Length: 112
Image: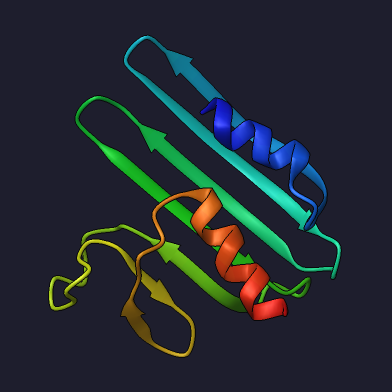
């Protein structure tokens, strides 16, 4: 959680961010945020982490809401070798992304 919050404030790709929801207790934390990138795009972030469950979604979109890429681990593509990790763009693909840092690195590669 602290690493994610630090990335939101220190990542050079991000112009600013909004914390939409944050909940924490000894057994879990849940963060929903939007990072506004310098190129005008947005990264919608969802992380839920507990001792028994990790759920994430990093949804990168254009300002008009059209999807660029979304990385998540919703368990609905068991046919993929990277299950439950996958990404959506023009279709569904395998993905190694499972942290905000991973998503940032993929965005940096895409932006050049």
